[in-house]
Length: 274
Image (cartoon, rainbow, N blue to C red; front, side, top):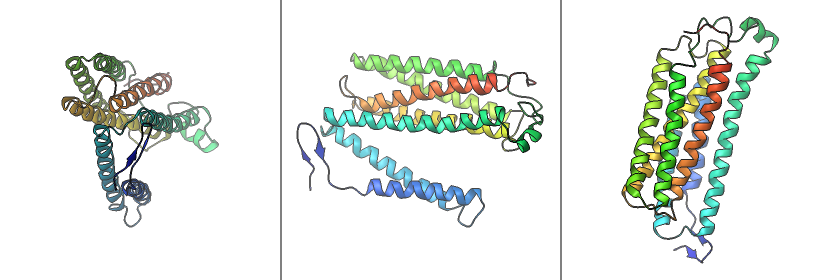
């Protein structure tokens, strides 16, 4: 049965994809718990959940693109899409608040046992050297700031109908995103402290690592937008997919600035630099 439409909104027939995506997310998170506790199924269940989740995401986003081509994205629908993206970014903000909370809790308010382990200092006494904030982290900060500039250039070019400049700006943003990820991988490989041996290493890698994961997701987001731009999908008046990707990327930029200041600069203050 085809969806009914009016000038404000449209009603689509029921779809099983949202239900399957929920099952995939639950399976993935439950599987990760099994893996972390080394329980039976821990090496299989999370991958099954991740595969189902990715398949549902691909199918769901494909249907959204088809709806846009069919003219189903009325002004009211576009407004609700913006509300959804804002709520998603808000949930991501709280996600990173948790990592920052852990970092500052470990460093400023350690428990009695933790205080004995860290030796009354931060970084802990077990950390012989830390990463120089003014070396690769500063370079990555400049790279992300430049990527935000190129993405804004691309967005404004699209608004003004200059598709060629929009493609160039998007290409530059993607290249800078890949460069950031490559430099962060190099930094991790040569880091003077491991993951999981103490509170500092755990908090550092979890916060910066999950940010790096978000950069990878944002880069994929922008690659999809680039493909759609070459397909001629976006118009100056209707390009929410691109706009959502830009919001996400700028959010990633802002989070990195907080990470750089709080973890790389403040968190390493007075420690031995590698």
